Amino acid sequence: MSGLLEVESLTRRFGGLVAVDGLSFSVGAGEIMGLLGPNGSGKTTVLNLLSGALRPDLGSIALRGQAIAGMPAHRIARLGVARTFQIVRPLASFTCHDNVLTGLAFGKRRAWGTQARADADTLLDRVGLARARDALPGALTYIDQKRLELARALALQPDLLLLDEWLAGLNPTELEQGIALIQSLRGQGITILLVEHVMDAIRSLCDRCLVMNTGRLIASGLPGEVLAHPEVVRAYLGDDDA
Amino acid sequence: MMTQDALRVLGVAAAIAGLACVPFLLGDYGLSLAINIVSYTVLATAWSLFSGPTRYVSLATVAFFGIGAYTTAVFAETLAWPLVLLIAAGIGILVAGIVGLSTLRLSGVYFVIFTLGLAELVRQLVTWYEVNKTRTLGRYVFTDITAAQIYWQLLILAVLVFAAGFLIGRSRLGLALRAIGDDETVARHSGIDATQAKVALFVLSTVFMTLTGAIMAPRWTYIDPAIAFNPVISFTVLIMALLGGVHRLYGPVMGVVPLALLFEFLLARFPNHFSIMVGLVFILIVYAIPRGIVGLVEQTVRRPA
Image (cartoon, rainbow over all chains, first blue to last red):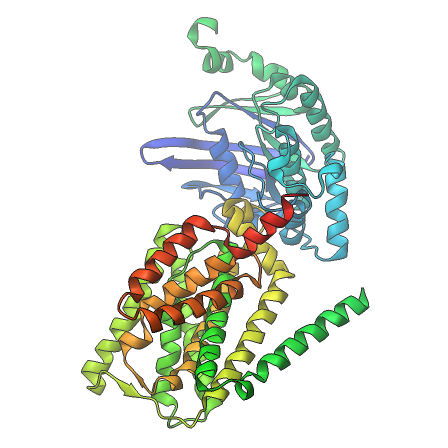
């Protein structure tokens, strides 16, 4: 398995707080990697560093061997890194179709015109939103807004997809659909790094997991092993339960 | 489909031809009112070209308008007219590029304040230069350009600004700007170079403002920094665009026509209370029709459905 994403000693400080502290890991092409940890452990900061929303203070990030650390977000997006947001951020004045079209127009392919519009419809259909093509995001349910955001991210034709608690807040049926949807992306050769708290999802989706606490990597490996790791149990539940 | 498009093109051509005949139909007063309306149409449409989709409220209109006017005042007597316009556009592009690159990272109220300050800064710079270097504060603009010629030039400029807006609206750049207006973070993470898109449109929008100033300068015969860089022009353009509605290309002109006529009426009838009445009109518009006339019409049309 070749490393699609190689992260080395990644560090980011906010004033005196070290949010991400010397993090190193690699994600192989086609892998689904879970990124876990208690609240405030630095998971979202890692996604922000990978996607270019923040610049790292130290460390390197390589995508397919190309250094991308510190690049502006739009360049990283064009190189094949797409993301969703912890709290959904659809383009509110755009129809669902145009939301997806935006990803297509400025992503790796820079598609435009009739073909792009058809591709947007295909992607909406793929995430189960074909019926809402001309609706504004505000009229959608929460799960549908999440689907929309996923479709917009997929429109960039990413090699690496960063999902920030994409499955959070879904009811059991929706969760099942959501897991199936992410599972189906694996078949397309998209590599996924997902921040998640939903244990069922982690167990059924992730090939490997990373666990962070206070900015540091405390465990990595197969989901079952990692979740049983004493350090991980201590980080989540405290000393008494370890 | 084809016939509908053809009809539309024909309609636009007929409207332009009709407007081009205005100088033959109206007297001096009518023509000066028409010039006023067309110049504000260019300014307000150019303003909303940038500020509409990005929601960056700019009060720098008069900075560029004034730069254009001063370019004419300095070069009109010695250079050929097309060259004067070219120089004006060039200076406008240069200033807009510098300002754009250095300020479009600002957002919200910081950008508004900066643009207001920019207009004042340019005015003070020109004043300083005139007082210390040329030792005159005012300049006379003597040209043989007639009012009708000014009107026609402005009309061409208006056609160009609408054409630019129409093409941008259908282009990738238009989509990028609307995305930036909605959520710049999402736009950036969707591969949009937000800075480049904003600077490009800011420059384009201000070129029209600069040219309007250059074309309008001969109307005054005498200009000084207080006239050419009068901040009221920026506010007027802003309120006209907001009254019309910035979500549609034809929105601003819907605000320009009624307000230009109203201001003309107020200025004639209540010259001493003009400012206070204009202030009231501003407040009324912002409170009563925040989405502009076009938004209001669209809302009422949509409601019964």
